[in-house]
Length: 147
Length: 393
Image 1 (cartoon, each protein chain N blue to C red):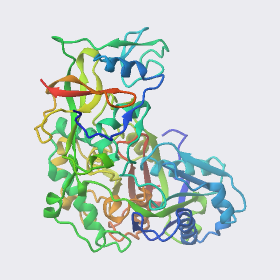
Image 2 (cartoon, rainbow over the protein chains, first blue to last red):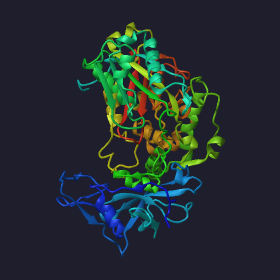
Image 3 (cartoon, rainbow over the protein chains, first blue to last red):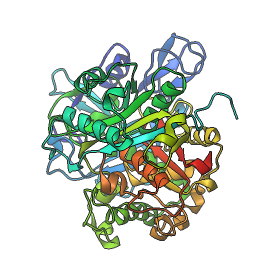
Image 4 (cartoon, chains in turn red, green):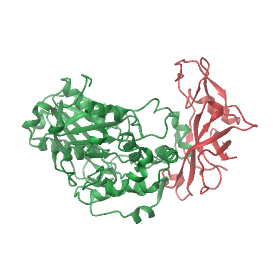
């Protein structure tokens, strides 16, 4: 069961972003980390913004008590159905999640649960892997829920 | 002041606009609209269109200067320029680029233009069915972050959280645009006033933005013709000079997937001070301001970053009375702007800024000498322009 309806645009991996999508399929959260200066980086880029090294590797976000933990940095509740797949659907919440364990990088996802729930900036959330097994090829989105 | 400045070296010769329509309702093709606006600007300037030798635009305008120059029989094409970036962030930058070309001798008579006929092409606020998202979009689009409102709501939400901004502040910005549009027959929302009750009852688009926090989508075209300042006194209108301009955004504003270090920003924190420094002015010197309303929250942050008030003063400062042309502390969006005049990607805001200096606005601010535009908050690059009367030189 996915949070947003079937028919939404699927993510396409490419040379730069493939490690993230491959790890998500396995329920792991991997982001860029520079092999030269150890800076965390998101979204993916060809070089490190801190030291300009092209030797930018990937690292798993450190877990906290077994969870990938983040904090809500900002959010929005979307009503207007911009995409045809969203017509007639309830509002949905998008969160911008800050990951303190990974240098404070931020990721965009949906906040699972009641679409009209009160959202609090600073609230702790954990990653939930939303597998789209029926897609061809299958893919996995990283969603968030309040801890 | 640096010797590298545009201050006082270039003047606005003419401004031109087509009729403004609701989106998809133009009876004319987009390219024809561009020609009409450019010819209107030339006529306003009393300049033979054949004399136009340069073109500057932004936001990936589809109307190629070489074709325009051929269509209008321009004697020579000396400058054709496109400012990178989407939305209205390039509205003032295109003017800056055109002015730089004149000041540096690349061209003599440069027109800045923008034309939109969304019926002929795709609308901004609608996505195509199905599909896939690659690159950095893959990290946002599948989660339902697609339209401009959805891309920028979280920037304002963060700013509002950090500074305790109340809804009444956004409402006042929307009310000011609609208020001024009622005196402007060109405005698409002319004859359609907005009450506080209408605003409060309007549907959410992307919370924290309601319907009336969001710009229209329109068809039409606008153009501004620039020449060297030496010619200004021979032109038909009261001279209007470019005093300063700047474009860009602060450190890593464009970091992918909403990772800009300074997130709750309209992207003007370094741009606005550069424009004002070039113009040799401070915020307190500004008589009238046009601030690009993609969304009211962007206007609010833009006004803060142009130095008109501190974030903590926003709730008190932003009232309709303070934003009115007739006696407000900071007359704002005096033609009705993107919300209520026309969403011509903010070129109409630059035209209104010129009208204020000329004394020709439908909501004329008394003895306006310094007139400022902030183009395209929250996108990157954004841009600012400062226009001034002879007395401001």
